[in-house]
Each structure stands twice: as C-alpha cells, then as structure tokens.
Length: 363
Image (cartoon, rainbow, N blue to C red; front, side):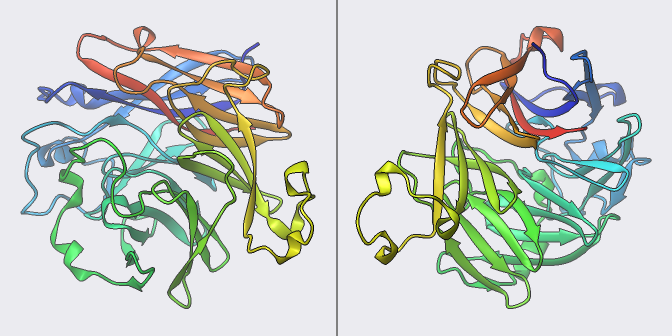
C-alpha cells in the first residue's frame, strides 16, 4: 500500500561544479508530496548558490543579501534540495544550504526565502510563535531569527558545555562556505533542534545524546541515553514526553525518562533504582525480519501520526539513485512505503546521490 498525506524533503549532490548561468537553472526538485490517495508529485524551488544567484530571485529574498566579502564556490557546490521540515501557522518551513524556505500550505508555492549570514548547511529547524531556530553546525552555534530574516540571538556551545557569544562568526558570510568533507561537522554535529518552553533540545550525532540548553540561564547539560547498540542519532519528534529518534544506520529509538518506564527483562537486576540512569531507549531495528529484513544504507527524517512512525531510508553516497519513505508501527512492521527513483525526477548523468532528509505529515 502507499503512504498518504506526507511531505518528504530530499537533497541531491553532484560530482563537481555545475554551470549555472540562467535563472531557470536555479530551480531544482526538493519535496516529494504524497497526497491523500497515495498519488505523488515532485515540487521544485529556486536554489541560489553563488552571490549573483541571489539577485536573480530578489523577489523571494527576505533577510540579508550577500556580504561584500562573499565569494563564489571554486571547488564544489553544496548539495541542492531541502533538509529539516517544520510548520507554523499558514506555512511550512524547510531548511536548505543557505536559508529557510517559507512555503504556503495552501498550494505548496514558495512565499519567501529567509536568509542571513549565519546560515550554512542547515539540518533540523524549529518554527514557533517566537520565531525560527537553526544550527550553524560547523560552529556548534544556535541561531534564532524572526520571520523577516533578522538575527535576534545566537550563542555557541564549547566542549566544556559553556554557552557564550562568539562575535567573530559575524565576520563571515557562511552561506558561501561549503562542507568539504564527509562525516560529522563541528564538535557535536547538532542535527535536530526543538524548543520546549525555555529549553532547547539538540541531538548530537557525535556524542549520541541530547544537549539541553536553558535559554534563560544560558547553561547547557547532557541528557544521556542507555543505548544497547551502536547509534548515530539524527532527527527527532517529541510526543507525550517521549522522543522518537532516527539513527542513520537504520534504527528508530523511542526515548523517555527512566522514572516513567516499566522494567524490562534486561532490567531485572535488584536495586535498579540505585543506578545512575537518565533516558531509557527502546530500540526498533529496521533490519529485523518483521521490518525491512535488511539494513538500509541510510535513515533519517521523523514524523508521527496516530500510532505510526514515518522516516526515510537509503540514498547514501554512491548507491542506487533512489530513496524510500516508509511508515512503520511501534513494533517496526512496515505498513506502507513509497520509493522515489531519480529517473522520475531528472538526468542521472552527473548526480552522485539523492536521499530523503525529513518527513512532515499534513493531516
């Protein structure tokens, strides 16, 4: 059966620099829209890369134009497409390499591209009544802005969990600096970001934990998880005091406070209450026979609807030019799926990979 009422953001990368000279060439596919009866469409949006590109779509730009010291990419363009997804009011919000796209819920058209100098290779994003939050991942920096692209606050977290303002980062237009290596970026490689009250919850791929930031006290603490298997956590959604997390190696974790969990057979030891223990993680393996029956080569993106969990799998570098969005239950059984082949989207001659990034349910 097919998925329904789901938006899937995806990204795609190329072997080298592309020759982008015409306005029409700025438009690239970025969202898979799966409708209520399983029918689907691919949505494309303009993706400026070099400084001049921004002037070509000036009618969409909201925020800061490129700085005078911004330079063209001379080695390899960053990936195209959209990353983290969220929604607020009448709009969906989607991250990209150098901005946050505000998309009309009514027809999925682009309303504006919110952009400023502290945006680079955005991962997860958060949108609420207070504004937008994203991470300048390579600098372990939380950045807050309003919906007009004005930076309202930013602060960095160092390896000792000190929270401070690093004014030097304002001297660089990060939109025109590309990640030039594979693997994690920054000390923590923050991915998912979510504001709950005065706290910001960040997932750290490098440490496989939450970093919890108090925005009033300007302090940061570690929220550890009792993983029973290797993990590379990426995305998350909170519901009913539980966090649902992806691990890019093909696992789903449902995490909750240790005091609210029932004992399992692994926790039958006497005096368990004497142990140091923070968050307890339930594991769903997608390579289990009742799930996919194989290990996917990638897994990221997280959304919930009723008792279903939605994520994307496959599409890692130098593998099949395809990825799938899947719906599973809490036992890991695959209920529905939708596979996207790049041949449905564009020319595969130069493309190196296409992979799903995030998922958002629309009803």
